[in-house]
Length: 209
Image (tube, rainbow, N blue to C red; front, side):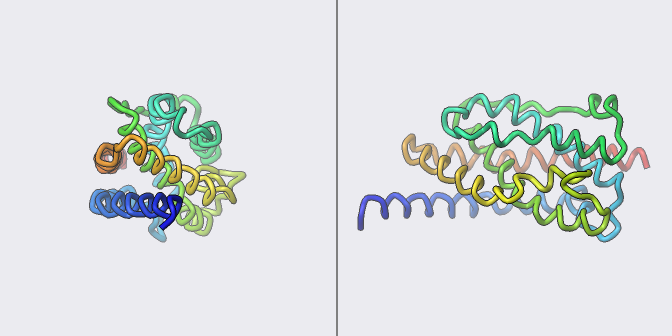
């Protein structure tokens, strides 16, 4: 076996372990009432805004708090800023700038590069799932990348390439620094954090209805 083949095998094994060990917490997030509401045939603009508003709080937190910790590992970070897309979508669907400014923002407690990369894994993975959400939102609400659905459109045609680039940089980091457990633990924790965060927003939404 060549050195390159062995390296790729190690990467594959880590990625499979990462997906396996985060599967349960990932599924809980997908089963969150706010996550499920966005995929119903009766999804409303208010449901959509509630979901985007919740995601804004963790997305901008990731950009402000996580990105600086991993800029030396993920070198194409300037291409991965997406909080502005959420703002544009919320404005396009009727929220005011004042309402957006009042949205709560989460604060991550980051103690290492591995932890920051685990958080980033969850946020970047959501971009892949956004393709499914985009198709549904476009079909039900008629929103487009140019009007109201730019966030779920994500990186557009570059989504697959940017995901592969991220996973490659992530696995190279864990191979070099032996930080597999740190990344996996942070990813599991982040799925739970976002699940709880969405739960708070869903409770607030229910209280307003």
